[in-house]
Length: 195
Ligand code: G3D
Image (cartoon, rainbow, N blue to C red; front, side, top):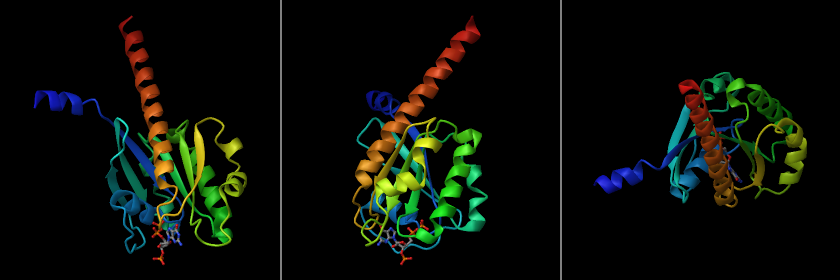
């Protein structure tokens, strides 16, 4: 028992915030990842939250917050203590790509999200005509807007699960690094305090 609890206490917890416009595929993706199954999804009013097992020494909690226009004003309530941001884009929704990009840029400007790593998911790659990851990277001007943080763009399909394992490996690694540097920063602060 003692051995088990001391081992358990070494597992870090990371908070992952998943945002994107309504219908981008966030809930489908979350449940595919959690249960390896596709569920009928309803528009998310509020949020869904799930703990996801990883093969690394870190447990992740994924917050999937509703993306309808009226919900977007509440996104900022979820920014504090986030270790990584996942932003989901419907790669076929060319009409709302600009809106999605504007919302994304707005998130990145928030002080709480400063330096927080980002994985952008170019979802719905199974649909013909979907913009590919390179096109999404260019359209979202990732080089410019994410120059202060780790970032990665992953093409995926939430229905088949293609690309999700790679994406969440990346997210977990980023979140782990982010947590470690926060902890190291905290240690330095504590040492200074003692001096
Ligand atoms: P949201 O949580 O971001 O609002 P949902 O989005 O997960 O509710 O998904 C919105 C719709 O997109 C759902 O279809 C869902 O099945 C579909 N979808 C999500 N991801 C993919 C994908 O990768 N490929 C395809 N083809 N469809 C996807 P409905 O018809 O239920 O609205």
